[in-house]
Length: 216
Ligand code: DX5
Ligand code: ZN
Image 1 (tube, rainbow, N blue to C red):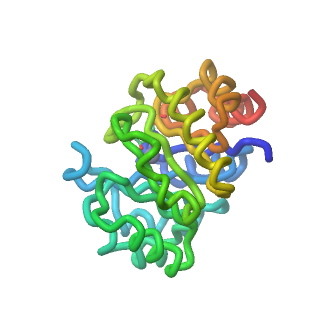
Image 2: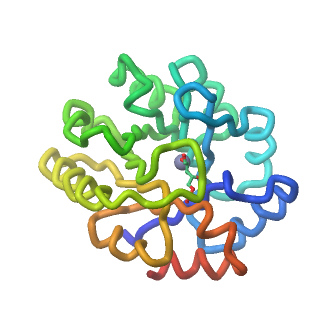
């Protein structure tokens, strides 16, 4: 499988959101990455259902919803109703992670779990066969445009080994500080999906930048 590109709308121009979504629709991007922040799990608040419901109406590619919220179980069905195709929760936010993963699948969405930079990969051993996706945070979550944390390469390789050893089908997604410079090394380390916010939306030609990420 060729790797996938998921532009993060957090870095888009919210005053021109429909144009930004059209750009992603026209580009070689594979998914929309949507960051939901509650000001508790992470020190920022992004956007919620009213915005997501509008995005769903114009987005023509799968919606990859990254929940940076505490106790996400409260809202899983609601996010599914807002168009989420993939729902990713944070390991650090779930007391009963196995149950949460089942609830995501019961909603009809694909299930992902995200690890903060300080959280070791091995903690996913008991659930790796339940997962469609693991999202490695390569910055501390909360903001776009931060510097990539290099330990992510080693974590990616460890995660790849865990997936292969357990014959899991989980894909590996990396989120935070992805650039045209580190994209190829991440793919070589085993990454399946690159999230890119600032690299895409701050570039002069976002469609071309997505093309370059896709063919790096
Ligand atoms: C950060 C978010 C990311 C963010 C990535 O907490 O999860 O998806 O938008 O932005 P960049 O690619 O600019 O680091
Ligand atoms: Zn994200």
